[in-house]
Length: 202
Image (cartoon, rainbow, N blue to C red; front, side):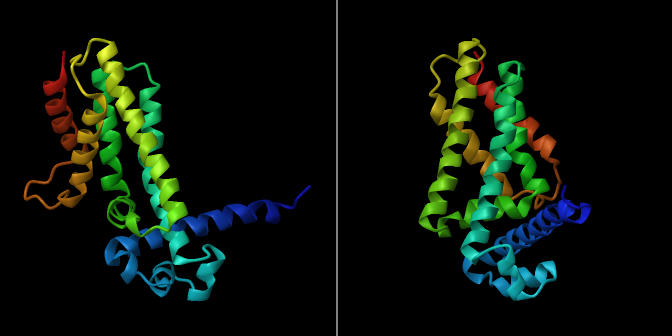
């Protein structure tokens, strides 16, 4: 049997690696990919620059991990919503809230994913792109479910509606927290869902 120390080692490594990913996300969000040196990332988490390569082989790999986690936040929650038994209008509201929540909870990941993923190497860009398309398909299917349940208009272009929701939700990160009257993510999601549902309700 492995000793307790050996059993705990992966957990400690994973926790430190998570901290390094968080630091990378913060640095990429603040300075952009080209302005984010590995020294800045290492300094943010309090380790020597050389130690960073124990967790990542390169800055490109760190960016890939940040972007994958960024899109993963959106995708996992949406898949759970799509498989739930909620009515279509509640699913749409939940999907919008799911998309907006990381803007408040993990803003560095959202900003990096939206603004820096074009700097990913080809293989990583394709991997992230597959998850993006999977997310778009899941949201499109959610709209299609609403039509099938006679909750949404039958003449809707499901894919176009899904892309419109994604685009508007993505734009929130550019102004969230900057308005004179601060709104919570829940309030923003309520307002957006109400407006979308008013336009597509059967």
